[in-house]
Length: 200
Image (cartoon, rainbow, N blue to C red):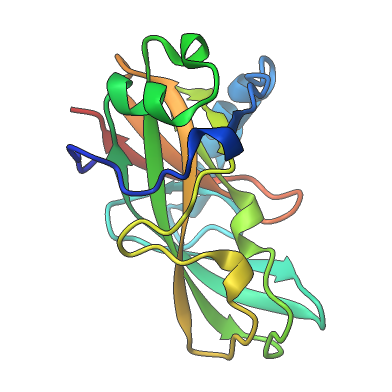
């Protein structure tokens, strides 16, 4: 369930923020929905599909990421989404007109290094995470400080050994009237794992 906050403590000065209006994948959404249904149908006999599918609250997924120095298997869990207000969104962007009717959604995703080599130069695992609202991809907020309570900056994590976990956050701009928020995470070229959170 999203946690509404009176003040999101993740914003940096307006001057360093830029709103990247990413294209809402037109054709991909239908393909994702179909393949998610297919993955669920195949998943019935097995508790964990090989790639993609909906996850329940508190249910993790397992995926592989090509890291330097080698492939690492991670356990991934979308913990929550903090949804802010329109006023908060307007304060953190350089062009407030671009976020009228929109709010910030901060997804908290926990990654646990399950197997593979220890990392010494950071990780790319968080690159597979995105936020959707009512089935449409949100707009990523570039330059948002990811140091809200409970969040770590992925670029500060250099040494990462098997068994260790880190929580990275992704900040997106979504419509204020969205009924549901989804956190997607996928392996490279894999189907997304999807966690749904009601908005409101």
